[in-house]
Length: 483
Ligand SMILES: C[S@@+](CC[C@H](N)C(=O)[O-])C[C@H]1O[C@@H](n2cnc3c(N)ncnc32)[C@H](O)[C@@H]1O
Ligand code: SF4
Image (tube, rainbow, N blue to C red; front, side):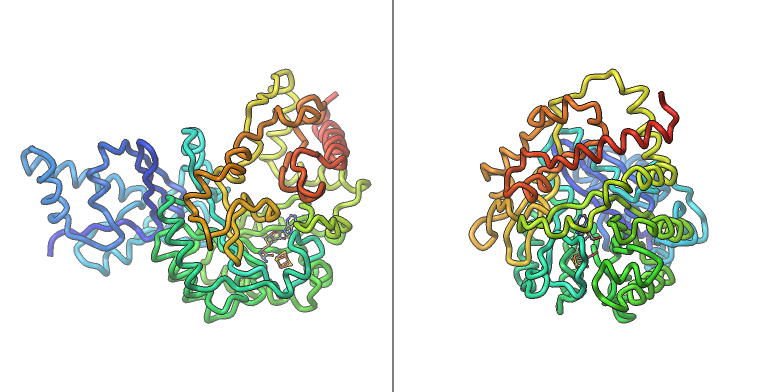
């Protein structure tokens, strides 16, 4: 048998504009090629094939000596193999053995055939698709992340949740055929990543089928879950669909505190057991730990716990108002008196945040703000589909309905909807009170939060955003010793 070659299971190819992109989710390696020189790339797929067959195909396109083409193709394969985009070998077993796999023992390294490849990509730790920055910079319309809310129903009752309790109790399940149809449409649209979310996605009776279909469609898959319903039988499924990450909500290492936020006694034990099960089985998780008044003294322990496994932990006290305009969940936000202390702790723990804030006081302080900057990617590079097929710009802005997939296609909504076009034009200049504020580096402008706070008016900023920004500004000056 001659030499076989295949794209690795964790490599994804996307076409956009003039370019063909390759991305590997295990080590965050990326490449892009101009489309006209992508003939070699087009010979590759996740199904193993004979190198000879690929060369035969190329011989039809190129009028060159076969030996030269063979040499070029072997070099091309060797070069891609170095960064784990492809594997080559004489047998399927050899290819399988060489597949890059995520492992907690070497978060920033990938074990390939017993050889450790050190990842040099700076974005590796953040586990974000580095490629998106190139796409965003190209100014092309592109959905990087499509949130598929497969159910709004949830087994927990988190005090801060943006989904109203009533909807979490009785929310519908997205029918499997609808989910498949939306994934087909997402594929046509060229969506980069699918984020399966809820409510609690593991409540959906057909989550396995939905995940398997998303894998069949070759999406990068991310899952957002409280993981309290994860059972050992889910592990083979997760191994098969290879999510790039599961974002898990963990609020404290103290069971009582965690459970007081989720409103479900025993939820901590279940989530923690599931997290350990994922770690033992090398399934990549990321922790999300919003800070509310109940866990204001506990979140650092969550960060420390995550650090020991090299797990990324996101934490923030910015809580989005509920989608029904009731403002009920905001009763649990961090009290003003604690903002400075909590923010100083975040600065101490997060080097990236600390450096960014330091730069905003020193390097960027005198630079005028680019008021033509876009506020956020909602409706631009993110979209959300609800369990009943309603499309909105993001999960927290469900009141801003862009269309219904029962009547419109995803592509029609994305390219032609007049409201989404208007949304794409929201820039900093539409928020003069932010542009003119001394604390502007600390002000998070979120049209969805604005809208949820002010009965749909996304241009109206809540006053506490400015108050919190001032407290963060003061905490930073003290922490960084800036006069
Ligand atoms: C809506 S949940 C859906 C997935 C799953 N049920 C979970 O809790 O992970 C996704 C994430 O959003 C966070 N979240 C919920 N409501 C929020 C809010 N109002 N503001 C900020 N984050 C919120 C949750 O803590 C969770 O980490
Ligand atoms: S945050 Fe997640 S787990 Fe908590 S109530 Fe909302 S959907 Fe459920």
